[in-house]
Image (cartoon, rainbow, N blue to C red; front, top):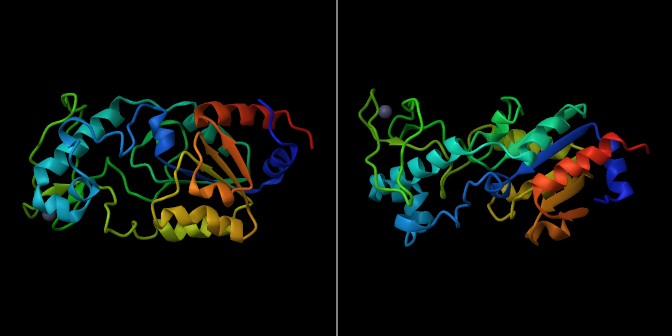
Length: 256
Ligand SMILES: [Zn+2]
């Protein structure tokens, strides 16, 4: 694989790299994107039904069942070469900030540490809908049928409220502090990688633009064209699991 010499120079000289990941990275581990997951029982339900506070209040069992089905997929998935390459890259630069829109823990399991900024929360950290106290899942992998099923959510041991997934839903704001930290890193970095995100979900989608405005080099890794193509200085078309390991390999041997 051939990479532009100026891209390699930017990476070689970078002191702070932000890696911003989206659903495409998890999809390479077999976790369906939101749209791809709208199959079986979920075919005729949209984001408002499945991923909003209003949808949860209307039909908690539908929403909890959907997230249990997704959590089962996450628990059975493994980090892919893109996750591993990002963890590897952190060891090669002075500072790397990992910002993800993904709600799984595949970056953590790939060795990226535990200070990853999860802009959209975590599927592994449910809490009470009423009082927000955390809830611990029973150990093990739930055995959900293909296509999922409706499941009544557990109740909070403190207030008997319903337990909800710990993810950010439509019509909700990002976790306190997470967006502020992400913006700060975006404004401070020399290079921002945008990996596997279609850059549509606001405000997360603003991050590459913030970095570009502050003079950072923006590198996009995506198999498809996205809204970010015009913002990015380099568009690497392909699977992150192939491109990132190849890029790191070249970077290791690079002499400016
Ligand atoms: Zn409660």
